[in-house]
Image 1 (tube, rainbow, N blue to C red):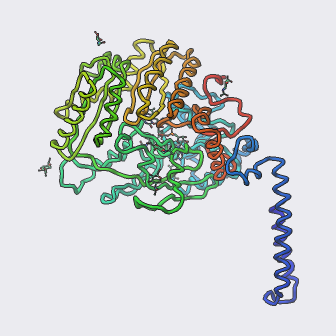
Image 2 (cartoon, rainbow, N blue to C red; image 1 turned 120 degrees about the vertical axis):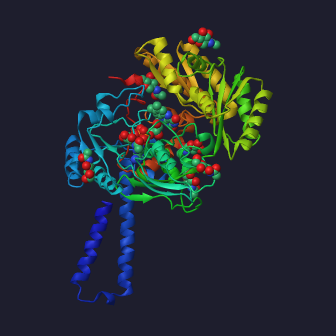
Length: 574
Ligand SMILES: Cc1cc2nc3c(=O)[nH]c(=O)nc-3n(C[C@H](O)[C@H](O)[C@H](O)COP(=O)(O)OP(=O)(O)OC[C@H]3O[C@@H](n4cnc5c(N)ncnc54)[C@H](O)[C@@H]3O)c2cc1C
Ligand SMILES: *[C@@H]1O[C@H](CO)[C@@H](O)[C@H](O)[C@H]1NC(C)=O
Ligand SMILES: *[C@@H]1O[C@H](CO)[C@@H](O)[C@H](O)[C@H]1NC(C)=O
Ligand SMILES: *[C@@H]1O[C@H](CO)[C@@H](O)[C@H](O)[C@H]1NC(C)=O
Ligand SMILES: *[C@@H]1O[C@H](CO)[C@@H](O)[C@H](O)[C@H]1NC(C)=O
Ligand SMILES: *[C@@H]1O[C@H](CO)[C@@H](O)[C@H](O)[C@H]1NC(C)=O
Ligand SMILES: *[C@@H]1O[C@H](CO)[C@@H](O)[C@H](O)[C@H]1NC(C)=O
Ligand SMILES: *[C@@H]1O[C@H](CO)[C@@H](O)[C@H](O)[C@H]1NC(C)=O
């Protein structure tokens, strides 16, 4: 009605000037004022009724007046039918190479399950099509069409995410795979940044940087990208989950390593969030908004990332403690004494049992909380000073064993237990539970001072339940992967334990996810952690940018008040 009104007004104006014998310029101010005032009054009345009406019916327009969008004010989303999907695909085939649109069984499978999600996709959670995009412009064409036909579209990088991030939740969905856009476009050595397409992986970028001749005078110096993650994870997925890893101790998570993002919005609009300087106060920080948005706000196609320089000299320290609380206090003291370490990882006594069991580690360790740390600097003298200080602080906190690497080989041997942690865990699990064993990887983070309590109480929860776990923590960041072994028939019992641990992390001022993200798996916990209003604000932002709700629907925030399942946790296996 609103739109109709304006169309009428326009026609009426055109008609008038067309039929008028008077030249336009001769219209008196009275006429002009009359038309304008009339238009404004009529417009206001119409708009008033329009909004009032829509208000009562759907509530969506009412929300225009509110700062947030609670789920009760969101109308039930309606998506394209099977027929609409076919029409969309037919139209898309005019725009992109049809060979890049796949319905092949294997392609569908490789885009619905990565073997690492504890929850397997239902038949209904697999896409109807996988579309491979080759450029930002193609992504834009694809989204224009999907927006028009209201087709749920799930962006996809390497598919290594762990919380059912890329499972479809609605019928007639497509996956938009951006991994073929994998070119490193430019490395600016002096500025320490690189412009890359979104399908580039962090390890691919580092391999490329290693081979660049550096103009630095010190040998052994080269550029690197500081954020690490699961192998081959694409930068798109890393931005989308605010990923991080061992390197975050020094370089932060993905969000701290991205300068600018080129992304395509739900309706096909292409946006760039920043220019290239490190500093900028130019407007809202959309780079930060897209980071961690898990493909629900925009499709990332290109980005500029920060680079850092590998220090020429590096070593590894391994420190064992009798007491968990003392180990954490020591870590706090490192920072308080101005020591910036490259990595501060902890393996708990359960994990150290697995390490002792493993044939992949030659070193003998005690079964005790153990810190694995990396230190680096300009040269041996600088690093030796740091090691001395780390040792002093560790001994002040009653460590019972302090080891440090004297050369490259020892360094690798000492760090092997951390580096191969996943394989060590799996071997251990297979040995105890047999070939059917699964691993549920948790990801809570708490402030460092609450870390020992979290680990202790979470382990009590696990023990009480009868499950067994091993823990690897990015302790410097208070981020714990307490990983539970379970057999397929124990899935739902295991889920319960995991949820209890999640709630514990919230109680201790922490988060249910330090680096893996929310996806479907942790959606119901988000309001508990942040409060309903914060989630309502996220929903407002989501629908401001994606009014048809096509981008990765049902992830991160609830968008359907009738939603039967709260996550795809085990309650809902068909
Ligand atoms: C063995 C293993 C180890 C891991 N270790 C770590 C770790 O140390 N640290 C860590 O943080 N994570 C880790 N993970 C989890 C995973 O690697 C990260 O979540 C990673 O960031 C996902 O990237 P991806 O390219 O695989 O993204 P995908 O799994 O393909 O997608 C993840 C999310 O990003 C969105 N997305 C993908 N591409 C785009 C795009 N172009 N535009 C917008 N959104 C997009 C998807 O819709 C989805 O919501 C690990 C996983 C495994 C299997
Ligand atoms: C996808 O499209 C591009 C561009 O048209 C083409 O070069 C490429 O071969 C296509 N990919 C496949 C798998 O056919
Ligand atoms: C990006 O993800 C794809 C899977 O979709 C993977 O095959 C590829 O190796 C990743 N990119 C790089 C450069 O590793
Ligand atoms: C750097 O390394 C090269 C080869 O390894 C060696 O020839 C050169 O002398 C080294 N330069 C310095 C400054 O140490
Ligand atoms: C990403 O992680 C960093 C911690 O390394 C955190 O400071 C930041 O708030 C996170 N950003 C988002 C968008 O989650
Ligand atoms: C914008 O946000 C990103 C991610 O949080 C951050 O890395 C960057 O420094 C911010 N930029 C500005 C100019 O604030
Ligand atoms: C380590 O493993 C060996 C054999 O696998 C075992 O004999 C030993 O007791 C273990 N050490 C500890 C401290 O548990
Ligand atoms: C989630 O669903 C399960 C099973 O339907 C139900 O028992 C549980 O109470 C629900 N949880 C929440 C937070 O709604």
